Length: 493
Image 1 (cartoon, rainbow, N blue to C red):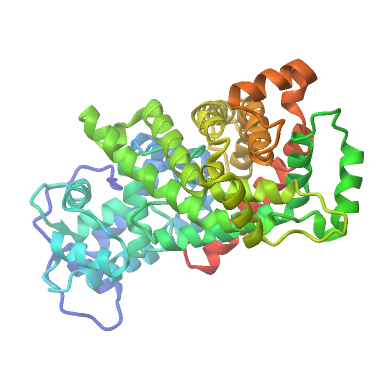
Image 2: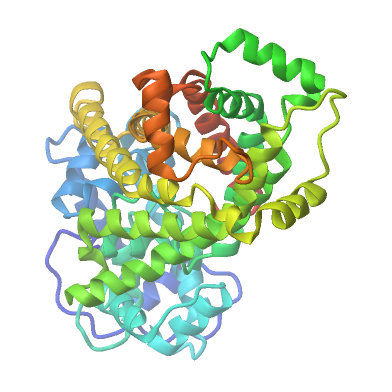
């Protein structure tokens, strides 16, 4: 990003500065070969660039308009964050003195990290120095991506990054100047890889602290699934009922079968699936994206909606296939009714299934499960983007939706996607729950469909959908809140 709208002569490079103790503005001026008066004029010029109306202050609309003029993609404008950081007296607008204070602090922070990366202290960052800094921060980056990074920051294309170029690129990023945040900023502004919310949580990079993100996501998912476990068991119990399924009698049966703990039967396996399933889906998604763009002969930023949809659907199918045996055992456990209220041992139950029905049964119902992946992801993605655009137009008056609005859009789109593919979920659950060595065993997916339609009608494919929809809002909300809390605990914010 070029933060200075005024034309300048090309930089001749920064003046070398020996390794400093405490960083002061004198270090910054020396690195920029700039006098205090010149710096004052530059900051005043940038303020006036945003304050095009000459009002003497900046509000959200003015900052957003200025960032738009700088051609920052709409999804990654930091107008609201920038306003919050600059607005020290919290009156909703930024005067010149507040803007100047932000600039002073920001340039000092950027100089500190610039000097930390510039191990030779020759006034410029070489690509290998940047690579070393990224590696030490736990960020794995290939030669091509490193070249891409340098190219975006290096305005005069001489292969090195001067402090002036470093400052111009990062000056208006309101987040703390750490190498992780800088990489995030470059990735989001320059790669412009958007629209993945329906498949992979937005903002997670395969390069930046991926293990920490997976831990945060795993704990958030485990907490969410535990909190909504009673609704999940109720849904499964109702799905397998071939007679008329009623909510209250189903709840009474579950309570009679295991009292309070009966509501959480199978949740241990559900929680066990979270981390490996997320990890497999995440890494498979990234590999498939690379493969798709290589086949298309384009870079990763041009994968497009259809590419993301295919990659997300296939990644979900791979993850589902790997952890599917756990899912089948969980369903058997949840539908196992016993008179004494004592749930069967998971190990013994798994062993009995293996011995009595064979290893292939652990993948019974996989086909309808996989078939539903791509349409679910497609409906979810399309609905999410549509709702987000509508909220931006009708509710937020063209400003960007915040986390709560995105959460609402994601909740509705997820519920819509789940409803559309719910019949496949019912077919899968019935195939999982029924013992294959029984006389009435289903012969396959088409047999489940035919018998359900024949004996229960179209409504039979939507048994248990009410508790399933009931858990959507709390599940999404709990996941979001715990995930954000874990990110702070793991220093990912």
